[in-house]
Picture 1: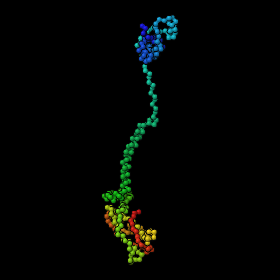
Picture 2: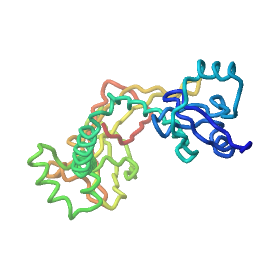
Picture 3: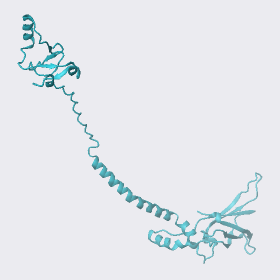
Picture 4: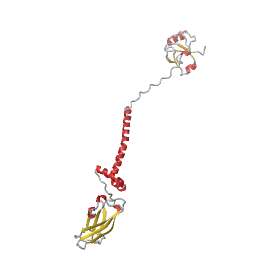
Length: 270
């Protein structure tokens, strides 16, 4: 049979009958069904046709004697596909090798922060109440008793507001006392226009001289009057000026060492 092909295993010299489609499966690569050697079937092709003595001797010397049994092509298995290289060893992530411990610490910190937030918010509220206690007591009188008890513990006090914009001075007058030479009598009306008590202000009295040619009016004397200087002895200064009320001021000023032509009076807070 002229179309029959034969190949010889280089490992055990077993001869196999093969076909061209079989050799074409893996570009001629086959595996011996006897010794499992993988070889190229086309490169190991032999001919079993009668030959001259010289050719026969050369073939015997080069390839070795054929085995007694001819094996069919079904004894040749296609060689297995090349094995995939083993996966590279995983690199050790030294930074995160204790990630479970880090996650545990993060959860602990998160729980701690969650517990601290209400405490910090409460501390912020208490600090704001402490700082604005006078404003709160003035605008919400019902909260004043509670704030007063808290201040008794904290060592603070509730004072009327310093609101100079709520103050007006009406009907001021500075006259000489006819009975006492050099003595001046200051009278004025202080008015609290706010709806809450305000602290009693300081009053600055400036005595002015004759206007100069430059247009300036010189100050010849100045005196600051504290609330205790113009308020009556029975006035509760700590309670402040009552809301929407007015107060009459009368103060005697010794101006025997000065000569004045006018005066200025305005309230302020220290």
